[in-house]
Amino acid sequence: MNKRNFTTVKLPQGEVHLYDFGPIKLHTFQTGDPLADEVFLLEKDHQLVVLESPCFTDSIAALSGYLQGRAVAGVLVAYHGAGASFLPEVPKYATANAIEYAERGGGKALIDQFAAAFGPSFDSGIHPITHTLEAGPVTIGGIRLVIRPTAEAFDVELPEINAVYTHMLGHDCHSIVAGAGHADAIIAQLKAYIQRGYDLILTSHYTPEDLKDAQTKIDYLTHLKAIAAASPDGPAFKAAVKNQYPAYSGEAYLDMTAAYFFPE
Image (cartoon, rainbow, N blue to C red; front, side, top):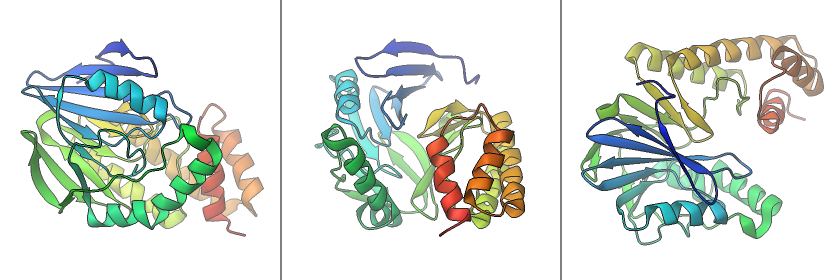
């Protein structure tokens, strides 16, 4: 499946890219919000399963309108726990560690930061989880999924379309990298994706990507570690990375990465 083989549906806020896998369709909602989030909808036999939630009120309204009249079997809430006004009557699924992350951990800290930064346009309500997921296979809405817990929440393998969902990739975008150990963990994860031969890698901050993009990210992370090791402080690190990757987006993520590599 080519990552550019889709049709586009414009919404009042953002747009949906629709991929046709035959028995399954993949709707990818580019929210167009200040965080450039992405939400994924898997459709099979006229039922949908949603991966992640939009968090801004305009995005919630736009996607809710798109889903009007469609049957939604459940929402998997992994790394984006905010946006509780989205589909409040639909079952919500998460692992125990994802619940902890959203309600009390690093996810909650981010939600509080975004609420302070964006005000009422950001829905800071945390989704109440109705079904706790365990590692391994699960079927929701007739769609087979494989839950892979991570340090913060969980990734989702989608065997019926040979794809995987994870939080961040972005082959030409900076990511939040919490030090050299975290970079090594991401590299190992991406190498496993390459070994498994996924057609698409879905992430909640970028359009669908492929294995060439995964290798590009591995190279970036490897270089990022080397730049950090050679830098005396955070500002020098950021300057060196921006010099090497001048066209990369996500400078706010680079700021966060520098704070992890060079804590005050």
